[in-house]
Image (cartoon, rainbow, N blue to C red; front, side, top):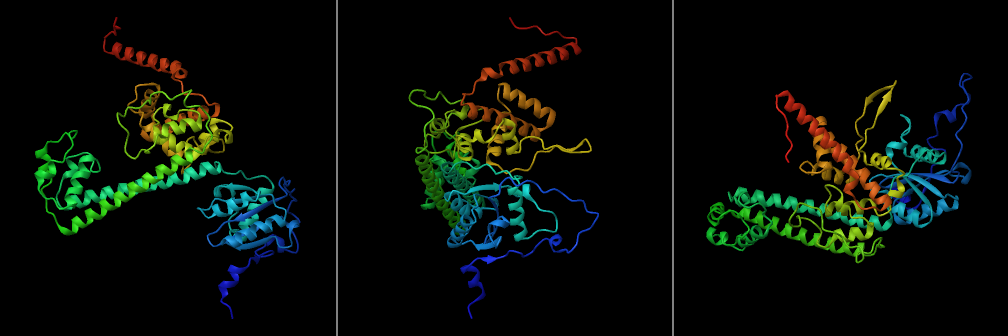
Length: 477
């Protein structure tokens, strides 16, 4: 007799009629129950799919097939059979939940077949309590999609998704390299070598030169200190004093392993940079860089920051997007690259207004009102790399001497740091939507009126404080 699991892999299962609602099995209905009019079907060719790691459940309209619910395994052969069955049932659109990364293979297969896929948030299509099963879930998705109650999630074009995948992988490699640096610090501390407290960056020119010499067998502190770069502020004697420690073999082994792994991470990051550059070059240019070159970057950094791409990402983002996003207050080249990889050049067409975009990012109040009273106005818990990038940009404005810096410091004093960061990220999101929607360059003149208003309020406040101290402000000539 064949093993039981082989039948699941080889064929799909007929689940029509299984787990039917209790109301459908009742022989009589209560006379007191009022009849309810069914919702109009707006999408008669809609199907619902419940995604799982090992099994997928599909529900089609009742009149399209004798078996309205079937299950398929997640092998490629079974996914192709699922696609063929949907085409036989004349299904033109399907709805599925974005469950982890399990939906991606089926999404790509159905999209290539010309079937519209509505990828929905699981929070937007919850069933009633007590009705949780795979069969009921796919039937519920099919019903909601048929009556037009589901909205698809934003997903950029395939070429943008490809860049996004490599960018996210690169971000993971950067975090892995940071863990290796922590391991280097730990190994040196266990040997009482205080090099990381004398120089600012252990993976800089001086730090790497000394580490490689230590791993090569050099133990003379003076010879190791002689490897310091001229830009290091610490003296050679101080560095030599920090390099006197207990060179235990087990910690040297850990140091060697961590250094080798960090070097491997750097090679992989460089490969990712080359791959991202080649992928961006395939995008259509929305601006001629030669005729409309980029101006000087508005940044306070005198040199490129660590973990920045090895290629000219600022120019590539400007060519693809048609707008220099580094001109956005608080934004830098890595921020612009994240926005390009997560949103794409045509994302503004998917959001009708800047309010919709801010709501999608979870940066606006989520008012919960009952009985005319607001119970809560906290923002929704949304995991978005775009929102994270905008929050980091907002947090970097706390020392900026411009309109956005003044506004952020006022909000911070009144609301606190966390709420001020969210409010400033919300404002940056609205500016970002406007720039990419209308392809306009960022112009500080737009905020001159608001900046003058803030200065007038400052002057009034200072005059009030001076009057309370029996003083008078005299303007400089």
